[in-house]
Length: 134
Image (cartoon, rainbow, N blue to C red):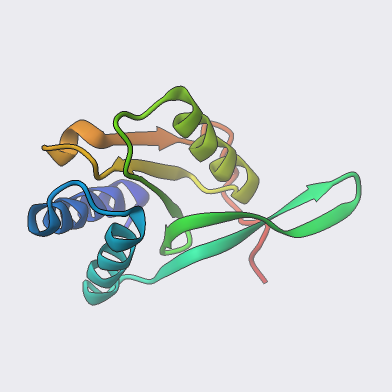
């Protein structure tokens, strides 16, 4: 499955979670339920995936944590906020660049209609090899 098909599938699963839970819960509840749905659909998902960073020759193993990583190529950054801001978008772009992932979804579950809280973010600098493989 290519990353675009994958993102469409994940959006459908996120809508399913939102349809059942509604808005107003903690991010951790949506994360747990979405991870369940993703795994149950046969896809590989990692929760709170550590994203190390390299700084001046040192390796910081616990630099960041990705909310969810699907099939080692799609980053999901989940929010429960009044509105998505530029900071949220920048955060996802940073994750995509540091991990060399091609695509991310910014999902704000604190909306009446989930599509109003979805943003698809492409890593324009993506290189088709993964530095953390192996």
